[in-house]
Length: 417
Image (cartoon, rainbow, N blue to C red; front, side):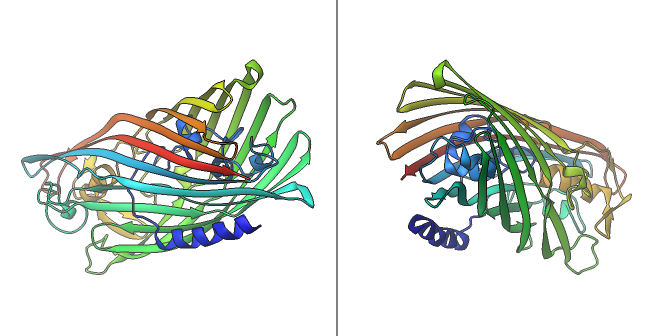
């Protein structure tokens, strides 16, 4: 319990230091949280390899994690480097630009612990950056006026930034030797900036999961995450009436399934996860016409010696941003406000290009002692692009194109006690 109280203090500090970061992997969600999970393509629903992965991926897994019956604390960090490029043709002029190269540090803290008097019950706490998206074309040739207000996207200024930090107290109960159930409360702190100053808000939701282990080598996991809306007040002037409007963005509901199996007496672990992300019914995303997304993950872990774990993985999630035609001054509605299609499509394609699909990952963990494990990892999201054609506000040919690729490095330290 002392360790849990210590972590509570750390989580409180982390809330004050919650960073602003811009990223996109599966839509605008990270493929996974925790060095082990991300090194294995984001898997963890059936067989997480550290405390933070258990809390994030499936709270029921805390009862069957490799560190049970011990307790564990993880401190993880992701160094995230998105690479965005855009080009715009409008008003008879074409311009292209690369977004400013930035490095974003995304922290993650987690704990899983049990009680001596209640050996079947486990508790967890977690705090981690889980979602975000944005571009920065300040002084790079793509204008914020291309979104809302007058003008064409030809001057400098376009900037968007969405980030979500999640706090998740969780509990799991081992019903039988082969079944556990779990639940987590999700408290989201989110900020959104569309170039006119940031607005922040809170969201509340939950996660529920179960784990089945009919035999020690095999594990099946299932999890559900509820929708979690956040309202951003006075974020920008959508309809050009001179007053800033609010926008609701909702983290969508998700269903996930995972299967894992250990081969060669536990030397080799293979896991595959499938997630369904309901973007089309999530406020904000449905107005900007995102499609539902199936995410497929495959991860492998090999232990040539007891102290060393070598991991690799692959993650695929189809681009959820649907392609449209740019219909010039034709009006489009977003949460009660109306704007020309030209601005609407530039916002979707230039401002929020959540289009990454294919990810390859790898990583290594090494037990420094029986209590401490160090982790490193790497993820590469390969470049993908989206292009739309149509007409601008003057009826002339218009074209929007964005491309996105990503690199990230993972570091972490786990302490078991």
